[in-house]
Each structure stands twice: as structure tokens, then as C-alpha cells.
Length: 213
Image (cartoon, rainbow, N blue to C red; front, side, top):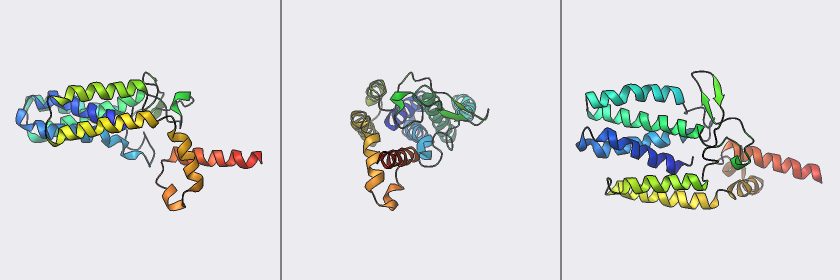
């Protein structure tokens, strides 16, 4: 799933946790937001492996969430909201597409790495790819659910996430082609800012072009 969906889902999952201590709603929503996006910080270094821990985040959430309800402190609520959002992110990626450049082609068998069992989990493709119409629909539903409970800066975050989701979904199918072309024309120091799968695809496209000449 795309990052805006993960961010909004993390915030939505924090709401029940925050219900045990309404005064901590703001910090719980921020923790859920951070937990929802945290696993994707590995985008440039072993994406869906380096910071994706589907089993460990789930175990942490299984401990932290009940603890937050039994002993609702700022710390327990923050940890519970963060862990629940991070676990949901990794599990959602399993039900999405694979790691290939064009996941709608369904050619990859890797979704998320399971460190506990030492293997890659295959994609379920219930959401065909990040930015798919069903992914955008999830962002829309989550944003609508959050709009009432949140206000102030957090409502701005929800609105911004929704805008990014709409733009990303509209452009998703053309991004691989654009990235492949950028690899061939951008200076080397800028190419390094592209995720590895785009670099590999660009190198492959260049190789094919040279072979055909």
C-alpha cells in the first residue's frame, strides 16, 4: 500500500488506544502516524526487509496494547499506538503487491521479509499494487473516519495525506517509465536518490537498448 494509506491507518488505529485516556489523544495520533510510516524508512536500504518486522511488531503490539488499557500512561499509550500501527503496516504490505517495479504485472514473489522465520512472505495481492484504485479507496475511507475526531494540525496532516494519495494514485502507472528515463539523464549524485528497484530497472532498460543496437 502507498505511504498515505499507511499513515492514515496508523492514526485510525490509535483512536481506540487514545480512548482510554482522552487527554492523550493528540500524542496517540502522532504515535500512530509515526508508527504507520516508520517501516517505509527502509525504502532506500533493503526495502520491506530492513525495518519491516511483521512478527516482532505484532508481538510488541500484543503486549503494549493491553498494557495501555490496564495502565494508561503517556508512555504506554505511545508505545501501543506506535507498535499497532507499525505491525498493521507490515501486515498490510503482505496483502498488497510485490516488490517489482510494476507490481500490477504480478511477477515478484516477495512482499515482506519475515525475520522470525527467515524468509520472504509472498504477496497476497488483495490490493493489487500501491496506488491502485482500491488503495486510494482505503485512504479515502480512513480520511473520512479521521476527519471528525481530529482537528488543528492533525486535520491538516489528514488532508495533506489525502492529496498525496490522490496525486500518487493518478501517476502511479507512469512513474516506472519516468524513473527509467531519469536514470539515463540525471547526474549520478541525483540518481542515487531513486529507490533501488528504479535503478535496477533503468540499468536493465539501458542494457536492452544497447543490445538492440
